[in-house]
Length: 113
Image (cartoon, rainbow, N blue to C red; front, side, top):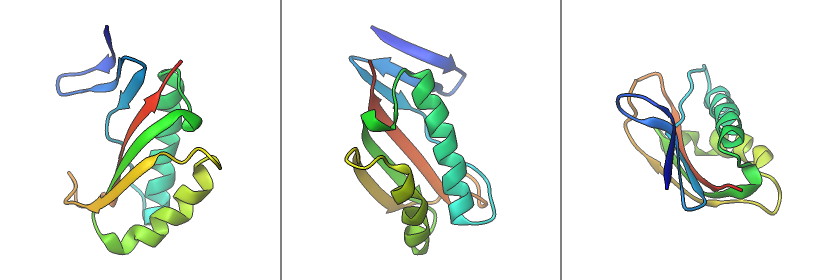
């Protein structure tokens, strides 16, 4: 069974199937990369709870940076957010994002109970 949560015209905020919750890409505006990362991670926390999951259950995270020069700033916030011993598989690359003000986008897949 597939469960879709907060489904709109283009996407659902969460899709759950076979024990995995797939979160829609998360972006957040802010002055610095650290501000945007913190905002995205706050949104991810809320979606994980809504999906019946948690940071400890993340399986894979894909991160898109508008500029790879922000990699250190991303990791500065990320490293404090990920629970020790529960780091997901992670990929990070550079991509043109939907709006020029965006510096980062996160895509998260997590197990749920």
